[in-house]
Amino acid sequence: MSKVLLIGASSALGREIGAKLESNGHTVVGTFNSQKIRDNLVAMDVRSEESIKSVVTDAIEQMEGIDATIYCSAIDYPELTIAAKIDKWQEVMDVNYFGAVRVVKYVLPHYLHNGGGIFEFISSGMATRSNIGTVSYAASKAALNALSLGISKEFGGKGVISFTVMPGFFDGGLIKDMDARKKARISTLIDSKRIAQPDEIAAFCVASMENSSYLSSSNLEINGGLA
Image 1 (cartoon, rainbow, N blue to C red):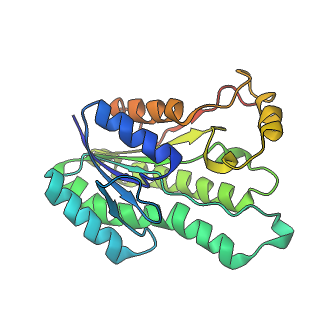
Image 2: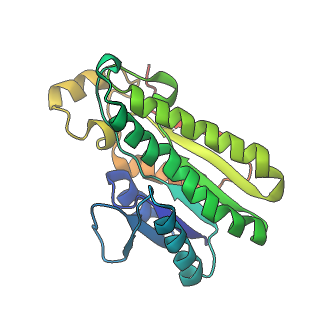
Image 3: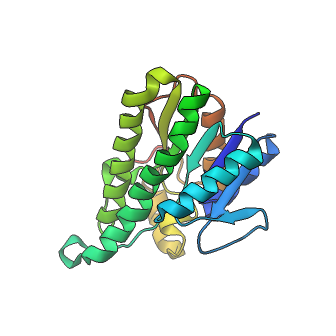
């Protein structure tokens, strides 16, 4: 069983990933920023190197090492590009992309010292599609894909596995506040004619981590057959 650092464990998807990891017998240190939904989560601000360094150090001590890191922190700021508020777009990039870079910076030395480890980044199908009003989010996830590939190129030969999972629409995340009629319209674009539940995406994320020995540099899309 693995020792897993789960970044962003209080989101809809993060909660399900954490629950699935624990039910499969893995040891988990989960982090939250603004919403502590369980007592065993620890506070981390992915915009702060000091916060990340402290949590990573404590997680290594608490679990006696880290075997896998799952990065699930994300925010979005939907608006058309012509109306872009640059500070808001920078905030999206700071959490969704640079937050992951900061985590890698402090986890990677531990992996190299121990002969390897896993980085699983929760990206998005938007990274390759984008959509009206989702450009800042899509760009941040495309950057996350590039980060994962770069880690694989630089450290894959040293036992470091890096890959992304790219969910399509699920009942949470970008569409958590969408009305039922719009969700029904989205369902018509999907081969399976339904939007996924967070636990379905989480099960795939955990199974991917558990079977990741040859996944480095992969971008794994799970979208029910989105057109």
